Length: 386
Image (cartoon, rainbow, N blue to C red):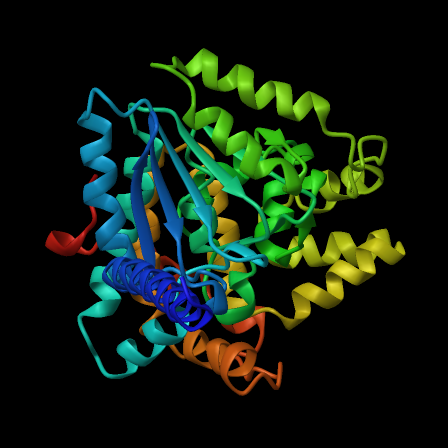
């Protein structure tokens, strides 16, 4: 074959190869586009959910909730699906929460979204809690608000050194929802009350030590862990627990570091055992330690309305079933999105980012018991009953 012919063939071959690669990319992007913000795949023995908005820290939208819920129910009934795995795309986040900016805009425009979003989100959270198949959440990276809702109620939650857990809703005129009223008061001592009121951030192994994660695995080992789970043949819950336990036991990162709040737990238990927010503040003032004064500063920046709602939500939630908690939280969500503090908090923290919200009422004294009772009132036929 002449050199020119050979070159022609080679260039045709490389063109063919390039075309093939382009077609593959197009097919992949078409699949991703169709799947959009959430990817739902059956792989090996598992149904795999990937939250796919990495640039927006995988924040949860109504559309995503509507895609995940029916698929979760299908997999739950499918005899060939033995477990469900949920994870986030990208390096930074599992899921940084619900799309509260969209919710605030919808509430101002009096749109249906505010009723529908919370109703469907909490219904999904409850479906995860009651799921008959083992549910494994890989909470690698930022996990807040709505991200907590699609992970913490599952049977297995795997934290890594990149995990960052927080329920910072009192900063934006909301409350730690998605079942926070159930799982927070069930953490050790008064830890959950502290986390819910202050929005304190737990990182890495501390997410496991606090009882939010069930296992801790090095972030770099997650792809291997996932492959090992997918390769299981007709696994039982015990088989899955064994694989997770093996990876957990092998992880050495921060193994010898104490829980970040360990030295403060006595203070937390003492100061946050009060029945009112005013008493908690008084306890922190009387304690006077640097830690207590730091928490005092944090609490003083939060919405007074949110603080009072949150303390009551957690106190009542401590003796309610998860379903009763969701009914209560749905009532609270509908009241909060109709009030000033939520929109002001979203503006100050997420839109203008001036971090200077002007709360109404501006202090705890003006938030009366009567006003607080209104937030907890039943919604009649609009109540969420699970």
